[in-house]
Image 1 (cartoon, rainbow, N blue to C red):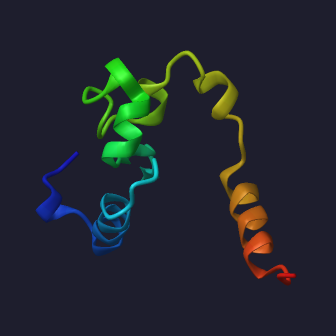
Image 2 (image 1 turned 90 degrees about the horizontal axis):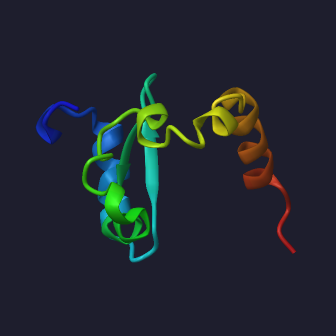
Length: 89
């Protein structure tokens, strides 16, 4: 990954949000779905941290990538958008 100073504004905003959270959070950024995450997520990654930071998801999680990769990202976005706009009780 390029230095943080070269990241797009949107990625910097996402990372700022994640760093301010005590909850495990990660983002898979760009076409390669490069992995960025906060300290709480790093604790869950165990020995994989820090080597997987900035790596494409397919490299970071080689054992489970065959399960995750077939997910249609456009469909996932539609599901999340529908959930976000659903009426709240």
